[in-house]
Amino acid sequence: MDLAQQAIEILRANDRGGYTVPTATGLYPAQWNWDSCLVALGLAHFDEPRALTEIETLFAGQWADGMVPHILFHGDDSSYFPNASVWQAGPARRSSGITQPLVAATVVRHLFDRTADPAIRARLTALVPKLLAWHRWCYAARDPYGTGLVSVIHPWESGMDNSPVWDDALHAVEPGPSVTHLRKDIGFAAAGHRPTGLEYDRYINLVIKFRDNGYRADCLYDISPFRVADIGFNAILQRGNQDLRFLLTAIGDVGGASEVATMEQKTEAGIARCWHEEDGFFYGINTRTSVIIRKPGIAGLLPLFADAAVAARHPRLVQRLESWLARVAYGVPSFEPGRPEFEPRRYWRGPVWLIVNWMLVDGLRRSGRAGLAARVRRDSLALIERTGFAEYFNPLTGEPLGGSAFSWTAAIYLHLAAESQ
Ligand code: GLC
Image: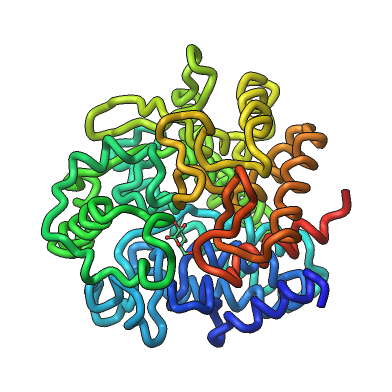
């Protein structure tokens, strides 16, 4: 069976009826927010209606205040910790109580651009007000004082759970009682490739703090001991803003489009403030302490995805990416190789994640850097050709890591492989 066929088989096998689990192994037995959006990119290559269903199911879990949770629990979630019974987000909400990167508008725009089917267009159009409500929520709840940078209040919201970028900010969080005995993930994947026990204790203590405060959008920003204006989260939001404004314009919502244009201006100025001239890199800011987090994680490259002008404005950023690629067998590592924090096998502390590669391929192409985009694409496809559809990969060796038969890896394969070069 060729690889595209294998990828399709994985997506079919991980389909739980209306949503796709990240992997069949039991590691993630629910619907994850940005996983579903990125899975839809791949599904669209062989089943457009099903791609839409994936996103519709996600938005069926949208909260009344506009938030789209990072996890929706639909079925038996007993193999996951923390599951719905730990989050206790409310009787009507079998979900987590935090969000994930707002990549949905970009995917919806992509589906909108590629479809010729009026029924699909109508379904996409129905999603647009929901996308707008989520973006509005994001600014209100995560940047209530209007700084132009939204903050994540839990490392899980960034999608890059244990990046070294969080280390100092996470130290401010009490670990609370150990939850190691409750963890299920280390039964499915090697503990050395996953977050540490202490990190997990802090993750859960944050959840309990949010739970005790009823997940109220109007207070979590102020009370969270962990609060970071992550550059990756803001860059993805900014790209989403552009795509959302396009969609609103396409459906004739002039007021909505101008509201989003204002969001874009704020975020553009916010991202510009994250450029560190001396280091030639974009960094996030710990908004609890106002300290700039001078750690070169892959999130610092994502302004290339947000804005096609960034590559020309900051050629040093592109050179930095090239220097990372020169030091690994397969790009793009999730943290700068050679740094003391770089761990090539541990989750977001070094391994390659194909979803981020796709964002860089897309951004580099839009920036006119076709050669570099082709290199990242080639590495991405080569990893899968060598070792299959793993959750993440060792950038030094190509070794597959984490869960196997992974949905978003399969989806990105279909998407990248189908694109003409
Ligand atoms: C991990 C990843 C996160 C992803 C989830 C499900 O928590 O860090 O980005 O959404 O797994 O695949």
